[in-house]
Amino acid sequence: MPTETADIFISGGGIAGMLAAISFGKLGFSVICADPTVPVTDQGAKGADTRSTAFLQPARALLMEAGLWESLAPFAAPLQTMRIIDAGGADAQPRVQTEFNAADISEEPFGWNFPNWLLRRECLAEIGARPNIDLRLGVGVHAVLTRTDHAHITLSDGSQIMAKLLIGADGRSSTVRSQLGIGVKTKRYGQKALAFTVTHPTPHQNVSTEIHRTGGPFTLVPLPDANGLPASAVVWMERSAEAERLTALRPDAFTEAMNARSCLLFGPLTLTSPRTLWPIITQYAEQIFGERTALIAEAAHVVPPIGAQGLNMSLGDLSCLLELSKAAPDALGSRQMLERYHRARHGEIRARLAGIDMLNRASMAQAQPLRDLRALGLNAIHGLTPLRKSLMQLGLGMKR
Ligand SMILES: Cc1cc2nc3c(=O)[nH]c(=O)nc-3n(C[C@H](O)[C@H](O)[C@H](O)COP(=O)(O)OP(=O)(O)OC[C@H]3O[C@@H](n4cnc5c(N)ncnc54)[C@H](O)[C@@H]3O)c2cc1C
Image 1 (cartoon, rainbow, N blue to C red):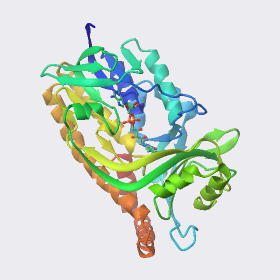
Image 2 (image 1 turned 180 degrees about the horizontal axis):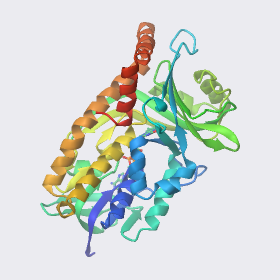
Image 3 (image 1 turned 90 degrees about the horizontal axis):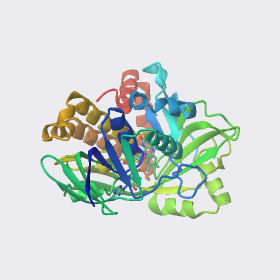
Image 4 (image 1 turned 90 degrees about the vertical axis):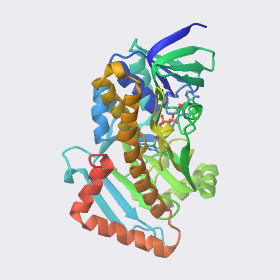
């Protein structure tokens, strides 16, 4: 097989990989992207990703520059307010309620929420319209060999590709990362997240609600109405055994359990999707670059789904690589460019991971005194206006 060439090869066509392909394609680079899995782009289809992604304020500029915002905007559910509730008393009832309103720090909402299956559909449509992006589905990266002036990639179908820059966007068990011998530091919590969608009688009013009790948060994130009813995406984190038990429950028993855990804040919830289960870890790559290679998204960092940080951090990685490529297109994939990427991102990634790890541990608290301390802390943070505003800016990535 003859060796093909491209400016950029992207391993992994998840949401991060596809957004990278579209963004670099828009800058005029030739891009090949490969993924062994074919994306599911219909909510009801088998294997559909029932999660949603809340793109925070800074992500919109990147989506606009990539030419994607226009097609996504009609499906956006704005996130105007974040409500955090502590229901960690003896009964599963709200005892402390705090609200963080985006109007306190800017004229825009905190972000916009989209179902993941829809994001995949719109990304695929955009890629299909760009002749300089070659997306290969059903094939993955098998081997990587790097030299000072290029990366040589062998795909599972035997294809050989040479690229100036290899981007590893192939998830938490990244093949690219292991081919380059880059290690990871991993923390396990014995915790899993259930993700599903619901409708409810009470409108969410663009409020994202996080309810803390034990085992992890129960979060309702606004979606556009479904079948004429207010709708939300739910992420329910629990210790692994409990999460597996809940996943296996019959729909009526599950509905009863989720209604009890939701404190009926929006009235009785109706389940409108299958339940999917996601193991929760914190992980980061010891280095996010190698010869001719940059790691992005979950190949570089994995966080518990708290505060919509995961994919938004991935877009931070992507923005950084795009800026460096725009500043010096001829140096694409050079050691200098990749060392700059590592220096700009690695410290920030580790700091964010440490913050989210702390929040997750507080949310998991089992012992009553710890739960009481959490409620007190929440009240205190909310009561201090400058601290509250700083935390909101920090969460959005407007502040480091
Ligand atoms: C329940 C839950 C809710 C979340 N909610 C949010 C949110 O609201 N906001 C937010 O910012 N983040 C959120 N996240 C995080 C976000 O979903 C992840 O950061 C994001 O999905 C990771 O994207 P990724 O592309 O790195 O990984 P993946 O989605 O895992 O994609 C990796 C891709 O690489 C492919 N691949 C694997 N091996 C190979 C190979 N050898 N060659 C080529 N390709 C390969 C896989 O098939 C896959 O398609 C959430 C996470 C969870 C678990």
